[in-house]
Image: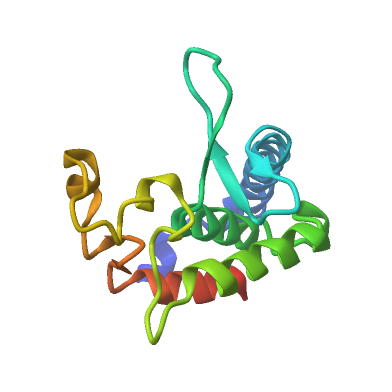
Length: 154
């Protein structure tokens, strides 16, 4: 009786509609990635920059989050090589390996990021003290980030 209740005659039309929606979303994602590469990627460095609403110069941020967001986003695009050029993939992987992998754990933020400038200072500023979080700085990362990074870099 369940099968009788289903209207399978509309399945081909719904399938075509879903294909069109998927292609539109893929087109939007491709445009977003293109613009991220143009306006936010720091060439030959493997990390990204934050844009500012006031139009001032982007601020480079050496963080694992961008590696994850972009890597997973490319995966949602079907991991099309053209979406993220091979040189960018290599630069991002190199950045991750050289700046975010620690001794047995992953950093959320590179020790080379300006926010981490005082990480070794015996008398850090108040801002530096506030930035010292075990789950989101150059001293460590939230437990789920290493796995997400692996997926993103795959």
